[in-house]
Image 1 (cartoon, rainbow, N blue to C red):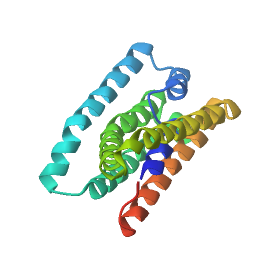
Image 2: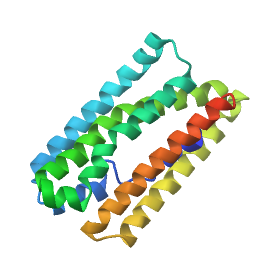
Image 3: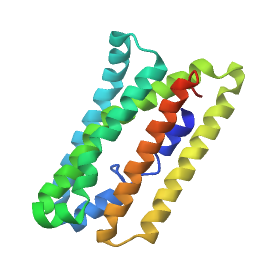
Length: 192
């Protein structure tokens, strides 16, 4: 599960520089982009409270709630991938394409934060001996940084606006791989 969480850093479907630059290239006003980011953060904050409440309400284990949240994130990113395509840019227009792209990313924060919180809780509970938590979480953070660096490198290798859809599809596939990886750990008694 920890490796699945780290895989979520291999993405351009976030409110980072790559997606922001792409939306600016579409011609979206920076004030609108700021509004998009603010709404996305509201979804993230909402997830901070909604995720633990939902887990308690359903009475699910950390593994099961993490699975729910990662699959929710994957589903919510579908409009983002559609919004990144040439079809959306040309047939729907820049504003509609950016709304799909950014709206999907914003809503997906609920799944992302829920998954992050669930897996972080699992790491806290299952790392044994407790004195090794620092090392385990350090490796987790280093792996996240490596995936994030790879995402940045891919942005350098595929810099054209028309190529952003390849990065978005690759990002969605990374989330899909993380979801499949975490789900596979459920069948084997949970993963760390």
